[in-house]
Image (tube, rainbow, N blue to C red; front, side):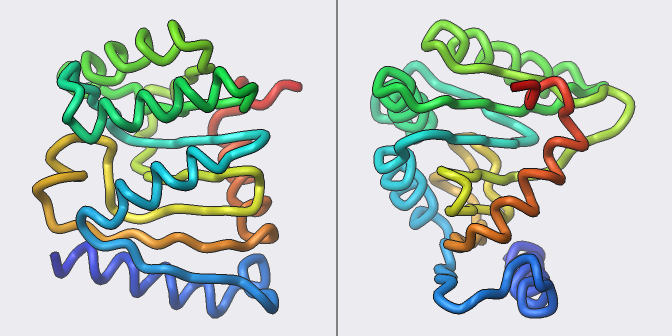
Length: 181
């Protein structure tokens, strides 16, 4: 919990110092523990044009009551509404991470969602969602049942187009193949 809280404090401090993130009217909403899943689903359901998710680990479950299944279903529904969705995942030297991400990638691709992997020579430990280039959700939550239901986690939602564009450019540098228009 201390680590997650420290991460959020660091993010909020950086936001206060970054011209990329500070403009009048920005909204910052902390998301601790299970608040994250509720807000993430709401934001996915509201998306009109684009969702970009970068996650170190996205481990889906077939149980309809699982939080990861609910995220997958919301993403599938958004794709059917015509929202362009790109999910950026870690390619690791750890087989367990690769198996989980590859299993999820197959499910996402079957729903018409684009999936990309990072360079396996460098770990991408980001947990970041950008919606319609104006909503950012970032923090400690992996997309796993443990992180979403059981762990102490802390993330933050920030409504800021400048921050969303700044982080989008950051992701473009990490995943250049994902952003060929």
